[in-house]
Amino acid sequence: MNDRTVISFENIKIACSGCNLVTLCLPMGLDPDDVEQLNKIIKRSRPLHRGDHLFMESDRFNYLYVVKTGSVKTYAPNEDGGEQVLGFHLPGELIGLDAIEEGRHHCSAKVLETSAVCEIPFSQFVELSSTIPSLQHQMYRLLSREISHDEEMLALLGKKNAEERLADFLLSLSQRFKSRGFSPFDFYLSMSRHEIGNYLGLAVETISRLFTRFQDEGLLKVERKHIQLVNIEGLHVILRREQREENRRQIT
Image 1: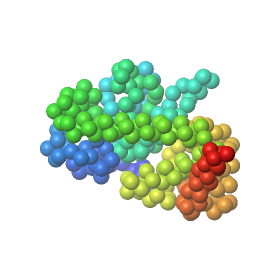
Image 2: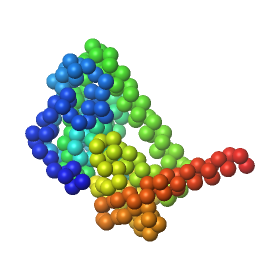
Image 3: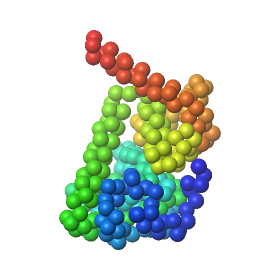
Image 4: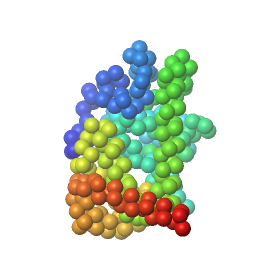
């Protein structure tokens, strides 16, 4: 998995039609000719490094960004002057949809590890979408996925306890890595314990304690940022237990 952070500039320039993220990203379901038209407007940046920003809060909205390699976090300032982590974005995922309505970004996007992104000029994308209905439909699909993710996150923070939140987070990462051709059982976390806790609404001490507890229970092995999911079914059991409790509460 360390190979994920090794980026060749030549690989960054691969066209959409040859990209292994084609089934996750905007080109999914497009005809080859339509993919070629989309490919013509996409800009592929140089490798970005941890700490670099794609955009800052209040920046003018010009591009949609697709993570090609690496990972990116989005965050916004909180009331204490710190930051609230809004999401972690993996290869194939779109960033910047929040800025479409007002023309300015409502959050910041920071690179978590050596990464590459595809930049899609939004004005050109809108123009192209008017002539390619399937591209417009794909945008609707991605917007729907974004809304579903927000709803799931609200449910996660509102109904689940600490262990359920971390179990859900790890299972989500596992599935997302699997869909990108990586191992669903063995991966490195590009985000810190503090960032995970911030995202899940938990103290960093709670996150560290839960990782230790999950390891003691044989659910996973953890060495710094290296995670091995030893018992994925056990993590699912934690979530099903919560669902049974919720059903019981509704009945009574």
